[in-house]
Image 1 (cartoon, rainbow over the protein chains, first blue to last red):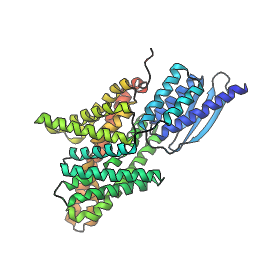
Image 2 (spheres, chains in turn yellow, blue; image 1 turned 60 degrees about the vertical axis):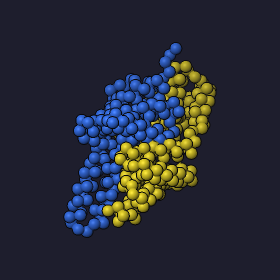
Image 3 (tube, rainbow over the protein chains, first blue to last red; image 1 turned 90 degrees about the vertical axis):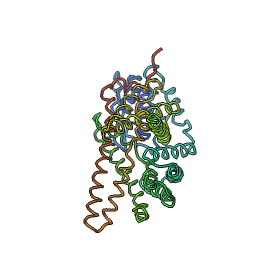
Image 4 (cartoon, one colour; image 1 turned 30 degrees about the vertical axis):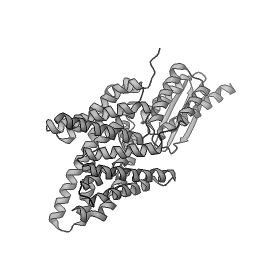
Length: 256
Length: 163
């Protein structure tokens, strides 16, 4: 009996860690709930969980012995990762279909979350090219694209360094938006589409993941977490606007 | 010439999709489909706006729907949840120019003293805010609708086929 309840405790702690990690890397709520329930089901346990922006409360019940275990866990700080989103989701199906043991499941889980992510330099170059293409889509010329490319790299590099130093997210966004748009404002010296360059230079900061996840959560009935995500996204957008405004206040006479 | 315009629009949207995706660390196998969806979605909006004279909001909804349905269909081939494909593909459709004008007109409104100027910037602020908010809202609806229509497929997209 003792070992059985230990197993229940270990599975519950694993599910708590798993769902908190999924929440931290930007997965929408219903997927987290389904994946957690699926893993519990493969061990013969019933999992109920309540997810909020900062914590997850879960209760795991053994349907045979009616023993149950509760756990409240904090959601860690983690960057958004689609890789973890897909791999962890697939892991829950693998556990369900192949009846993995807890040890196998943990081994695969740690392998996924410790796998190296894309090199930061590669991200910088790709994001720079992306924002430059974005500038093109809005009608910017080649010169403006070059300026946006370098402005994005400066802004994103700053963001990566500040995030690594654990500076507050909102301050990170304001400073990155300010620096990126200030770099883009060098286009005013040249004869180019400078307003488009300044407008697009900050768009790499747009919080697409919380925006879409928030909407998905709301329509799927997780209104509270959905609103929490949308409020967070709205605050991030306001921060982008503040950073951009600081540049505009400095240069507005040249723009008119 | 028209074809060239559409292709260049699709190409730049694809690059933008890949780059914005890279910031969120997607699985390597997802990049080609993110690029494809971003290109098709943006080109669809571009065509509707340029040739059918449809407004940006409705065209964005159409683009969002193309990306939403595309991601639920393509996601199955590479076992990626649909949001992994749809979110980076939607980002190139964010109305950045309108969002910028929103901030710009707000600052100009606050800093101008003449009533005529204030009125001009107030009007500019409202029209740009309206477009920005509506487009973002409709893009989200477009990407979310497939989940509501095909819940079973959307929830088992990462499941390996039983052999």
